[in-house]
Length: 264
Image 1 (cartoon, rainbow, N blue to C red):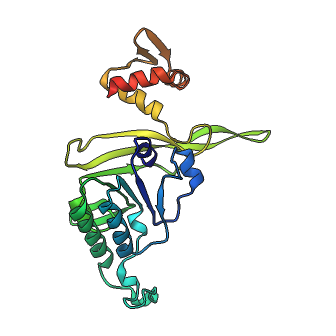
Image 2: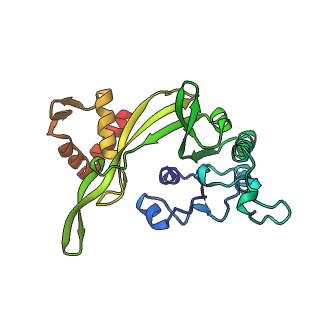
Image 3: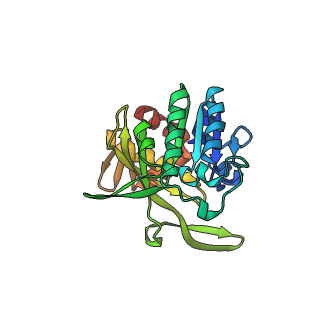
């Protein structure tokens, strides 16, 4: 998403709270690291809020916080010295949710044009009617945000996409990607309960989301591409198997763009 925003000329800020971002991986995904603003030395929710607030007021286009789950509440720090407290002194009940709630309210109060994307690992809420997956940080985030999308993917090896990898003069088969499904859990502007999926590749010739196969899937859904059994039809052309069509579109970017234009 950062790469797509940058290609549209948007200014982007990444708060790397997890410390997991590497410029090498970002470059493979198409991110321009020279133009990306990265904040990675702040873990406290209060500090992240103040930093992001300044960028929002300055008119930045896109803020990505990765992730909310990795942020730390203010109760973990001494008020006067800002030093990290001893572990047994950080047991204030609900402080994390309170601070995340205050952060959300602050952003919502001052924001006029910035897209703020919060990545959050799922936690489980236990209720009288059963267990419900929900984002980290309490109810406030869910109430204030305009869109909530749940992503899921299996880590089981049998569900991974296998591929051939070359290392020097050796060639071997290993997992190179996995299917990911998404579900729009909340959408104020329409699209709620819509769902879909894509293949995410982390090794091999293609890195990132396979947007070509995703394009074909969407084109079939709306009738731009016709599928009859194992055959796929686009205009006067026909292809046996999806891999044949994917391969053709990889080699013909003009044809791929034509199909995407029709989709839009």
